[in-house]
Each structure stands twice: as structure tokens, then as C-alpha cells.
Image 1 (cartoon, rainbow, N blue to C red):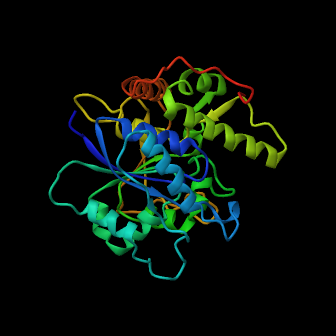
Image 2: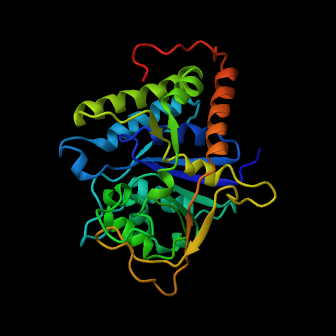
Length: 318
């Protein structure tokens, strides 16, 4: 199947394992060509100063890429957030983003699929503003538009200035804000039944999530419940699982919202004249998104000769 779109994946792979599910699903889709994978930073408040979360994310992403049969390997994103006064630093990663966006040997649309902070794209844009005409940002992040104030949403807080920079730019934006990505719940029973039996890749994904959840529960001294959030998987739904004759993500409702700046508290300011509106998704087609994830992993496991019925939940099952 010829690719209908090119995709740059940018995610905080050392954080919640939903990004690893999204990565595996994305690289196994046949209708898109994943051209780059970037491991991005986590918020400073989540990590110790000596922890290399970007490097940890590279290792985690590369494990999934190898299990998926992909020859791609992750690139390091910026370890530091976009500084308030310093000029953006040119790096191997920002130069790669610019080079892909400015290619003149293809007319296949380019999506920048981001499930975390926006440091590297914002830096690339500040270095080469013409990329605004050459790609579409699909972002899991931002408050809902009905929320007036409060702490910034998690992905926004990873690099507030980067998000502010892009929302004040002409970069086309498709946004899946917090109230929408929070809809992407699956139960642990579904993960054990549907994903874990699907060869080494499926087992690895569920094990990563179980290990992460157990660690967070011990830290908090509380239960996180019976569900996990596939919060980054809409990146696959909106870029790869689109309509037939019109390549649109038509199964998930959206509407256009006037471009507004993101304020320091994470809320939105007054509309910015002269900039394109933001396409805000208010719902997610969970049936298509989850069913395709399961089926795609099953096909991969079957082709690799794995017994997809061999899994039995052990004592660690939730």
C-alpha cells in the first residue's frame, strides 16, 4: 500500500507507556511512512537533575522498534526546555526535522505527531520558520477550551514556552486536548486478553505498562484502578486510520477554534488575528483505534510465527 502521509513521531518514551503502544501501532501501519522517531524530554518536576530521561526514552523506543521489525532507531530530543531568552540551539534532531519538512522530492503530506512536549519542533520552527507551510502538527496536549485556569496540562507543562511559540505561529495544528485524550480508556482485562498474547511485542507492551503502573502505585500509596489510558494512540487514528476517498479523520468529531495563545497558567487568551484556526478533536473513535491496534499486532505476531493464544495471566496480572 503506498503511503498517504509521512509521519515524524515525537514522544516522551521514558514516561507513560502509552507512547510505546502508539509507536508500535504507528510503525506497523501500512498507509503512513514513519520517517523519524524522536525521544523527547519529561517535565523537570518529574525527574532528578542527573536522570537522562531522553536517553531512557531512546532505549525504550528502540526496543519497541526492534520488536516491531522496523529498521528505524530513535533520535535524542532536547534535554532542556526552550529557554526564555536564549536563541534555539541547532541540533542533529532539529536539523533533521527541518530537512524532512523542506524536502522537494515528494508531495506526500507530513504530519508531526507529538505525544509529549513540543521543544524540538518549536526549536526547528524558530530556526526555519518556513516549515510552518510544510507540515501539520498533531498534538496530544493542552487544556480543554472550557477550562478557564489552573495548572497547565501535563504535556504543556513539559515545555510551556515551546507550546506558546507554536500556538502563536502559522503552523497548522490538530489538537487532542486533555478532556479528549482522557476518553481513551481500556481495561486491564482487555489488555491481558487482547494485547499480551500477541507475541513478544504485545507481551512487552503490556509488561512495560504493568511495571510502570506498579511503580507509580507504590510511590503514591494508592490504586490507579482497573483501566489504562491509550492517550497517545489518537496520533495513529488521526494520521493513518483516515477515510477512503477523502483522507480525513472523519470518524472522530472535531471543530475549528480560533487560534489563541496559551497563557502561563495553561489557559487560552484572546484570539490571534491572521493565524489559521486550530482543529480541535472533541471525541475519539475508540472502536476503530483499539480494534486496529489489536488486529495489527495480531497480524504481526502471526506472520512472525508466534502462538497468539499462549498467554495466561500470571500472578502479576491486575
